[in-house]
Each structure stands twice: as C-alpha cells, then as structure tokens.
Length: 357
Ligand code: AOF
Ligand code: ZN
Image 1 (cartoon, helix red, strand yellow):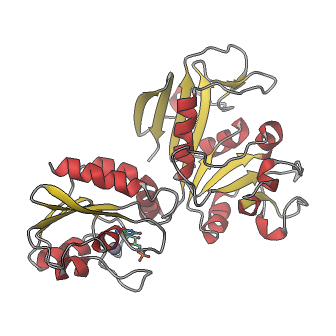
Image 2 (cartoon, helix red, strand yellow):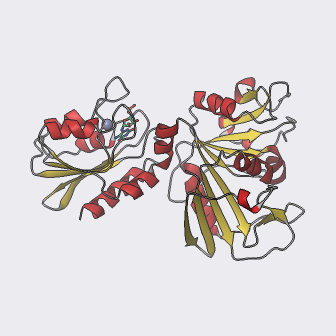
C-alpha cells in the first residue's frame, strides 16, 4: 500500500528530469480514504517544491485524515529560493507523512521530520528507500561528496568492441538501448566527449525522446588538446550551439567558439580533474555523462573519476576492432571492480550498470 503510492511519487518526480538539477527530483501524492486526491512534483529548479505544487490542488485547507506521500523529507530550512515545506504541512494538519528518503542536504538532514513529529504528525520513513536513492543518485552523491556524479556510457559487442578498426560503429546496439541512453543523457547536466569522437561521428549530443518535449538540453562539452575542431560540426552550429563548451589548455587557440564558451585548464597532462570540476560547478554543471571515445573513457576510469558505468552490450561478436578501454594493468590484483552491479535486458541488448560508489 505505502509502496504503490511511493512508486507514484517516483513516477511524478521523474517528470522533473532534466529541469530540476542541481536539486532532487521529488513527487508527492495526497491520499484520503485510500484514494489519491492530489498529485504534485518539483518541475523546475527554483520553482515550487513537490509539496507546494500539490498544495495548489488542495481541496480544502484542513487536511486532517489525509496521508501525504513524498519521496524526500520535506525541507525545513530558510534563506533559499522557496519557502520551507514542513511548516506548511504542519499548518494544514496532515495526519500522516510517508517518506522514502531523509534529505541528505545537511541543512535539512532529519530536521524536516523532527518538525513534523513535534507537531504531532505521524511520520513513516524509509519506504522504498533504496529505489528513492537510486532515483536521486546524482543529488545524493553531490550532497555526500561535493563532487560531480560521472556516468560513463558505452556500447559494445559481446566481445567488448566499440567499433571496427576503421572507426565504423553505427549501430551496434538496438533502438531500445539507444532510447534508454537518451534518458540517461537527460538526467545529467552535461555530455562530455573527446574531440576525436566529434571529428569522427559529428554527434548531435542532444536528448531526443519521442514522448517528451525537452525544454532544456544538457550542456555539451568537447575536450581537445589541439583545438582543431570542424567548424561545421553539429554541436557548433545547431540551435543549441550556445550550450556547447570546449575544454582545453590555456594556450590552445580555439577559433570555432566565442571565448566565454572555452574552459581553459592550466594543463592537460596530468589531467587536472579538480580544476575542471571547479570550473564546471561555476557553470552549474554537477553531473557528467561521458560518451566517447576510448581515450576519454580510459582517462576517467584509470583515475577513478567514474561514479557509474552504464554499458550496453549487443549480442554480437566483432572480433578485431577498437577496445572499450585502453587500460594496461600490471597484474590481476589490479582489475577494476565495482561496489555494486545490476544487469538487465533492454531490447535485444544487455544493460550493465556498475557503481563505484
Ligand atoms: C527541491 N524540490 O520538491 C524538495 C527539495 O533552493 P530551494 O528552495 O529549491 O531548496 C532546495 C533544497 O530543498 C534541496 O537541496 C533539498 O534539500 C530540499 N528539498 N528540493 O528542489 C523538492 N522537496
Ligand atoms: Zn521543500
């Protein structure tokens, strides 16, 4: 019972995907006599929180006898973009509040629950807690580590090849897997590729989901040492070109983009991850979706910068071709292992998700 209403909160929360970062995705439902009487979700960063979105549909002001389901603890802190939600819930005399996750934001971190309980409201926490954390893994990671969440996405054949030796790679995985990857793109603030991939594939790096009107595309980041980028590349010329940034060394000439779209790092070798993250945070980029090629992936993986590997494996064999990663490890004891893994099927492909967190 609690679980099915909480699942509805997750569904509603997801409607804010791509719009609420760096805030969490939050959904809320109000239940009376076992029936949902109002729904809400956090739709936009700086906009009303899920509970406040719901309140616009409140049938009356006194909600005694009602249960409020919400996937994140109501906020209690002030001096922010929106008013705190917990006092509002208290004022409306909601009978019970059912929560999935305690807010990891140190300014809340249990204070919202305390505020509700102090007012005599029954609070149940931890409903589908694991699913709730997974839904907001990017937010949880940032709150806990102050670091960006980095997903490495790759597609390969069963024998771990991403392309023929001549670079030809379209299309290894099924349309279903490619669609799933677009959902992944949507959840991240920026997509990062290497210049080699830009030259070879000329990708659009936009989120394209048939059922969704995408109001805000992720930023597109191109890492280049040489600065030689094809002027006609889609990411430099399409309607979202103002959301494309080039990452390079201070001295490299970039003539395809205005200076404000160039992120200049003090060095590229060794790669200054912290300096990059600092500059990205200033742009409001707190999560990265790495999408090729092998050099970029190897760089991030070898330096333990990846939070999650999302790998689509097509049931096909290529034999000779390009490897997923160009790592050279000294011995078996050095193999890279995950903290947790999940395997599902999608279309005809295998989806492997491995977390390093
Ligand atoms: C959200 N949406 O539905 C809930 C959030 O800057 P503000 O006012 O939007 O506050 C952001 C914080 O509020 C956020 O870090 C999280 O701790 C808390 N809860 N945030 O954006 C919501 N419930
Ligand atoms: Zn709130």
